[in-house]
Image (cartoon, rainbow, N blue to C red; front, side, top):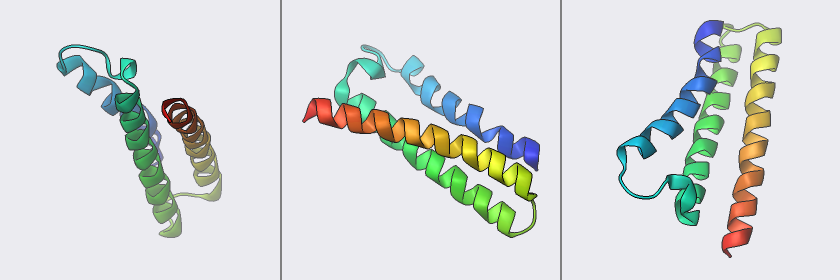
Length: 93
């Protein structure tokens, strides 16, 4: 179960990196609206991953150490995404 949860983080990165490869034209990070949309999607995925992690902990599938370590990693990444999102929204508005 821990292995599955640890694979969530790289999976989130892959999900964000694959779609631009199949789109023609400009890179998603070149268009401010696209950057904001991508960051919002990543934020939603991280919040979902944290909720699933908490659910698994609540059902006894994870011990305290694993839960705290994985949750800390996800929260750090979420804080970074939220910071980047605020910066993008401030620059665009």
